Every structure is written in C-alpha cells, then in structure tokens.
Image 1: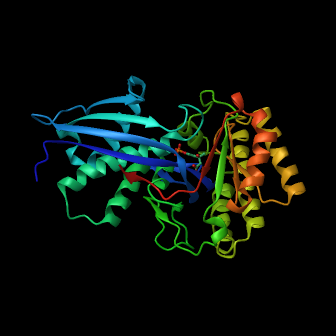
Image 2: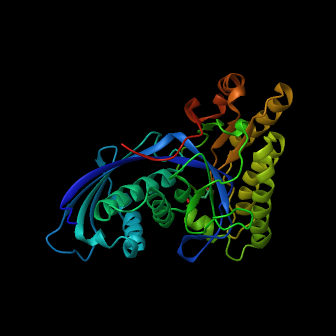
Length: 348
Ligand code: PMV
C-alpha cells in the first residue's frame, strides 16, 4: 500500500505512578515493575502531518511546534526517539513530518508531559503504520504503541490505556512485560474505579533533575537492590488491596512509595532534595486533615516538588473544599488541577 500523505491526531493523558519506576537498564528496560492511574484532564494533543519524500532521507525530516510556536528545543529528544524506534517503523525515513503538539496543562509545570507527549506521538506513528498494514488487530496496535512510547519515555508506556496500568515483569501478574504496559488484569474494587487526583503546583520551575539523570543515579546506588525488591513486594501486596477495596493499606503503600522515591534521590551520589518547604507543609496538612475528617485523602509525588492529592470519588466535595481552603495557599499562584482516573488515549 502506498500512502503519499496524511494527517492524524491523538489525545493522550498523563499518568500518576502508585508504585514508582525509578532506575532502568539498557533499551529503556525498567529496573522494577510499576503501576499507575491513568489521568483524564492532564493530556497532550498531537497532530502529525506527513508527506512522502521523493527519496528516503538520511536524517529524519521533521518540524515540531508547541502551542502553535516552532519548538527547536524539542528536536533533539524527538530525534533520539526516532533513532530508537526506526527499526520498528521503517517508514520513518520515507516521510517528512510536522508534529504539532499542545498540552492541557501549563508547560514545565512539573507535570509529566513526557508521558502524555511521547505516548501521543507513538500513537500517531502507529496510525501511519496501520494505514500501511491495515490488518493489525486493535490489541497489537495498542501494545506496539505502548512499546514505542516506552522508548520515548518509560512512563509513557503506561499512558495508552486506562484506568490502572502495570508495566514491568512481575511474577504475580500474568502477561506483564518489561516492553509495554498492560491493563491491570486483576480484580479492582469499585472504590478505586473513580479515584480523584488533584495536582498542586508547588514549584513550576525547571526540573532540577531530569529523569534520565535520575534513573542513572540508581546505578551503583547503595540501596538499589532493596528498593527494586520493595517495588515487587508492594505490587504483590496491592493485589488483595485492590480486590478488597482496602484504602487504608493502599494509602500506606502509595505514600511510602512517594517518600521512597525521594529518599533514593536524597541518598544517591550526587544527592538531591526535590521537595520544597511547601511540599512538606502540604504533606503535614494532608495527614492532619485525614486524621480529623476521617476521609481517605493521601498524597503521592513525582520527581519534583508538586503534590498529587489522591482521594476516592465519594469524598470529593469534602476534600476539594479542604484543598481550596487549606492547600491552595501553598501552591504557586494558588494553582492546582482537579483530575481523575481516565480511560487512556484516543484518536480525535
Ligand atoms: O518516564 P520517565 O523516564 O520520565 O520516568 C518517570 C519516573 C517517575 O515519574 C518519577 C515515576 C513513574 O513511575 O512515573
């Protein structure tokens, strides 16, 4: 089949890890398995316009724009991504690409735009692959999209589907793979099905540590092996927690995972403190509120100062009031984003 030109658009969400991916081997293979909630509101929309070149080009031929403005700064990252995926998408040198991307959240707000951005781009490329090979199944399409997204940014492998996605080989999870994310195959109690996540923008500054540098810090880290085993143990514990709706123990694992991620950064060489004073203020406020309100609000963190506030849907009114009254003042310009669990990426 010859496809001279075309255009495709995907909207792909960010995700928030419950068991964190931190540390990797060659070829974007995770050092430990992870699991995340797929988000709904925090997303990237990418339109890929492609036209066939007269002859295959040596260098990848593409332009990138963010929110309508040319973005030269993104090109090296995308070029690296193209190099990595070329062996799986041989048409890459046959086309010129215009990549137009926009985020639903402020850029460099510290929200993982690499997960939504790389998964959206991987899906657009798979769409071209599908027009060249129309027989592929939906399952294969999604699996390969996750596989390709992983090569752009590890956590992006978990953004193709929803609502709970697991990535990385784990003995207790049938079908789990280091190569792509899968929808969590075990029972999930309804209380976890409409979970909410409000992202508090504590520090919108440029990331102090890129995730590439961060993952590298786990090589030769004195606690690496214990940490990787702990991630496996936490995933095993989550199986009965998800099935029974045991939010108390869910909270114990999720908060410990967040603090462990930061503890790894504080104990590496070189070492980093990515939390800000307001991050700690917020954590203490959440703990005090959980105690006094008898709600099940808890927090998790990415590799930065922002706080993700997690709570079940039926406590939404009470927790969102608390966020507005007591937590917003610790955010930059009182900024936060109410999000909730979503179903993954879609074509638009
Ligand atoms: O996808 P990367 O390479 O940017 O790594 C993301 C790592 C964390 O966000 C800190 C944890 C995770 O599992 O998403």
